[in-house]
Amino acid sequence: MKKTIKIDSYNRKILATLHLQADLTNIELSEKVNLSPSACFQRVKALKDAGYFRAAHADVNLDQLCEHVLAYIEFTFENNTAATRRRFTAVIEEMPHIMDCMQLSGDVDYISLSCFPDIKALNAACSELSDNPELSIKHIKTRIVLDRAKWFLGYPLAHLKWIDESPEY
Image (cartoon, rainbow, N blue to C red; front, side, top):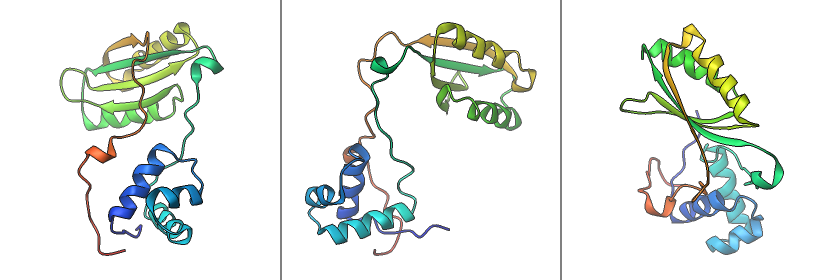
């Protein structure tokens, strides 16, 4: 079990800052959160050890790098049982072109954000999924992304209620 730590105002500042600027040096971060470099380093390490950071990513300019098709794919199941959902998520987990997949309420069971090299590859993947009887897919709807008015650049941490779940740091 991971050690839990108190998310005080300094830890909130560290999390909110690194969440949007993961490439900061410890010195730069310590200046932004008003801590000494040593204290800042110790807090970042404790936050990492406690599992508050999943990974660090670079936001690359995909349009500048390669040809691609972004699409949302909606999945509706014939039989929405726990076993069907487990089989579906196991298959989706192995598909690198499907970058994000979320279970929804309402008339669509899952929606995913995908990135394929072209529409032919997107269609082939959708056909492969719908042809798999183990997945019990009733309907697949694709929505090609024409333009991105806004792209995910991090969670709005400053506007969310923080959960304080542990004793003092």
